Amino acid sequence: MLALLGAASQAQSLFSVAGENSGFGGLVDLHDDGNPAHSQYTDGEFAGSADAAAEYGVLHAYAHAKNLGNGKYSFATATSRFSDELILQKGVGGPAGNTGYFIPTFTIDGTMQKDFGGFPWAGIRYWSDNLYHSGDFAVSSGKHTYTGNFAIPFTYGVAFDFSAQLTAQVVFSGGAYGEGICDFAHTARFTSFDVLDTDGNRINSYSLTSASGTHYGSPVPEPCSLVALATGAVGLLRRKRPTFRK
Picture: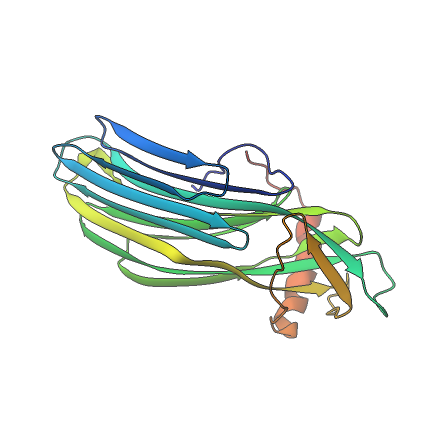
């Protein structure tokens, strides 16, 4: 399961952490100042490296580890995260209602390689308050591509948070012999968004600002899929929302 690291989301923040542990020792490098994290650790039977970096709207994570069979649970892992606060304002001729749905689209693609006991895994999760969406990939080698979106309810003129986290890791359970690479270093991006009214109609007259000052992408998703997404979100929001630590 992809854990949410660090404290609760601030109005804007960047976070990255990279580390390895051979079961006998390890290293970790953590930054919450926007700088990338890098860690590399080697002992007699284990070698691992990890890199993570976060930008607003773009996340990077890379992990590589090799175990010669030391009998210990060991791993290399990298996690990056951004949190931002967004405000939507009505434009000229905007909708009559004061609420709607903000629909971000996040795209991730990368590669994994495994040899014998290495277990590469990557996961993306993005959320607003307790409404969240996630996708993950595990074990299989080759290229992996994932695109996901979800509907965030909002009120015009009222700030709401938007956060995303990417993790890449290679794990050896029981110290198994092998090697693994999980390379999602250049690929996780907040690619686009759309704005709908509460009936699922696309809104074109609005302005979007962020606490970080980032100018996020232009809307591009297909209207038919967005209407279905917003309609489903109405029922979803009436159910109990899941909670988890941030």
